[in-house]
Image 1 (cartoon, rainbow, N blue to C red):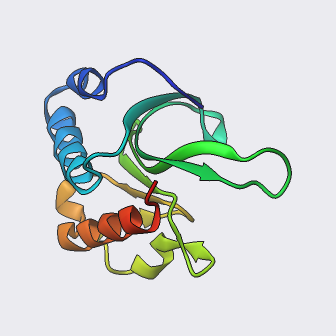
Image 2: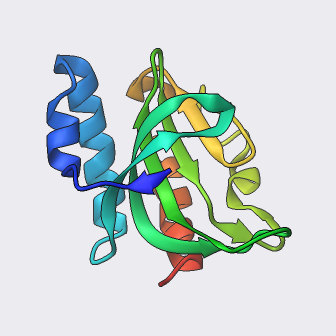
Length: 141
């Protein structure tokens, strides 16, 4: 994945009605929490081999056990074919921060560093806001 010159606002504007509104709502929530930090569109082949466009918030350098460190984002937002994804790359006490929020985020699917859901009504917004705030604290640039 790599950063591209596409504006996050233009990326969001390209989505149809309800999806665009949800992307905008999520973007506003994350942008407010990450105020003053980077907000960039990333594109390329992501985990699982799929082409992705992800809005990344906050620059982060992730060390890799083998090879060079990787420039990445602290939090990412993407629309998949059937759901929304939020990627949380913050680590607390040696594990992805997301583990601390299992069972608190509503009717969502959790990966090791990702949250997937179909509609905003499925998400506990207060818990999501708490998670994102903590991620911002843990990943100060």
